[in-house]
Length: 336
Image (tube, rainbow, N blue to C red):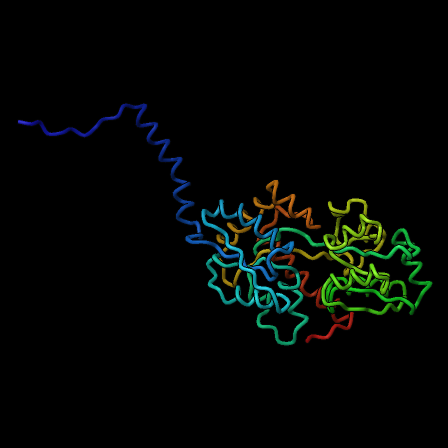
């Protein structure tokens, strides 16, 4: 007759090992249960594939996908000054599976540039995290007799009513910054608004205009070649791509339009939970801090941000909105 099987026994050492294993597995199991990414995550970008924002998004997406345990898919939705991409995200469920990686314009200033925008970014999006700052630079052609900001302002004063400057569009940060400089100098400069940076830079190089404001990536090669001269950058600190170019503040100009700096950031639909928002911020910070993330962001002319939180970004967003609105109004920009 067969004897009944006895349950296996464990000695004290084996029991301790089992207990330790259970304790270690606990947090992992909890993370698996609370993680929001149950399928590929979509990041909507309001620009065409191949541009700086798109490339940065794809690099960060590779790192964030590893943290989420799901692929991060970049969905390019250009057009409408970023409104098409923003509206797509606004209408998505607030489960963290669809977010927007956009600019200050698509997430903030469009509110003041259009009479009836399809959404209000401050009310209809959840701020998650900034990934980098996007300063712009004041550049002049070589025949401008100014080697620094002080000489430039003196030149403006001496040529009141005779000068014009270019920007990459009505309501752009470039327009607001140059309007401020013109007002400070009493120069009465005329604004030439271009449809993007490429035609503006072409006219700078061709001598049709002598002054412009542009993104660092677009003007870097022309600065290096000696065809354009950078005099100052916006924002609170110097930029890694142009370390020898001072900020406007260093030159003694601390007006709001010159102190402000645009950004690239991630936002989700209204109603996202604090836990999901925190997971996005942690993943983005880690991706930006990676060697490849840092390198790509700096090479594109931006300043990496790898320590942001939904709370700090939300406060900044709420504070900066009215400032941009006030500057646009002061510059005479009328909503379309």
